[in-house]
Amino acid sequence: ARGASANATLAKAAGDAFLSYENPVTAEAMYQIAASKPGVDMGRALTRLGIAQADQGKYAEAQATFAKVTGVRKPIAALWTIYAAQRAKAPAPASTAG
Image 1 (cartoon, rainbow, N blue to C red):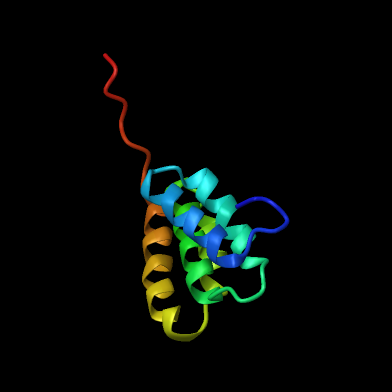
Image 2 (cartoon, helix red, strand yellow):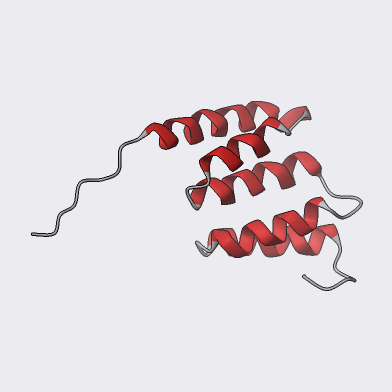
């Protein structure tokens, strides 16, 4: 999916697989590739890119990505924006070491 011949569908599918396997770093890379290819469903690719970023704790980046979403996925992106904003404000968990 990283090769020059990779198309948007293949890169997006790879991103979906990596995201489902809880590998948001690789998923983010795949969604970035998908978003750069012609024929991609940009709203879907950007929404999932933002989710992968949020899963890594990149909340500011995720919010910026969600802000780029238009069309039918915009309401979904708005909900994810709220989630990312809330997570960004959340205090770090207390240490349980003792």
